[in-house]
Length: 94
Image 1 (cartoon, rainbow, N blue to C red):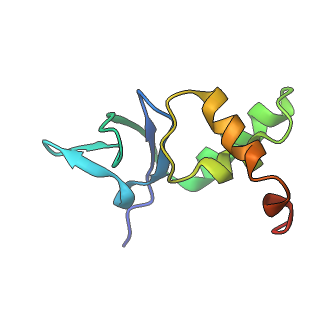
Image 2 (cartoon, rainbow, N blue to C red):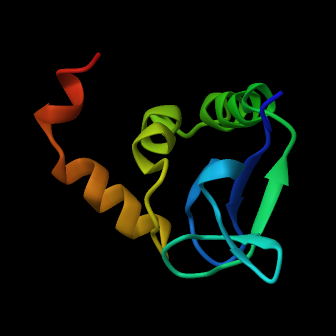
């Protein structure tokens, strides 16, 4: 049985499956910057949180979050700039 946990940064915006996290003294951490990670039990919960946040007035949040998966950003502004910079490339996959 695979581990279904989704982990996300306490000090960065990295997120992904727990299997993709690094480890520091047995504690899951960001594989890029070493930030310790929080966790949720599965992708369904993560997706529900994102959907609620988007519906609460943050358009395109789920697309931004999908783009951010596996990438380490220190600030949301940096993630948003990188997402915007992908331009039409992101629309090709819709």
